[in-house]
Length: 195
Image (cartoon, rainbow, N blue to C red):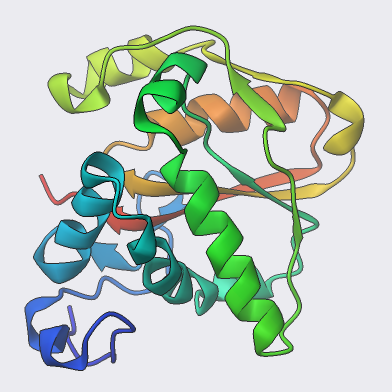
């Protein structure tokens, strides 16, 4: 594992951030950084501290990932349940997706269509952080539905989330998208927990 990639947040933080690389993990999810160090602290501040100003620099880190260069048709952020979104005031995955695509377009790079709210969380689920791997999968099984199958049918979809641990949430989203007729579904998260 390397620490040699410059970070968009702060170049002095570079030695404190563990780079995992661009290849998908055993769960099929690509996550370039470990859930530790300055990026993890920034994501916590974004999600739980309402620090929306951090979405731009974090989105820049995602914009550089090779998954966004693979010619996906649609980028879909993993949705929060409407109650959690209402309590938080925003959806962090949606904010990261917006900023990642904004950075790509500023650089003149190709970017997929952003399909906000293409997926919906049909029921409120327990926070995944409270659960083990088996419980996480059961917690989100069948918890996602595609709102309009025509938006994804026959298209290549890239799912985006802020953090992955076991990949259960992204797998549940992927199952809903494939059931709705998506041609291909890949997953990208900014951070991976190392358990």
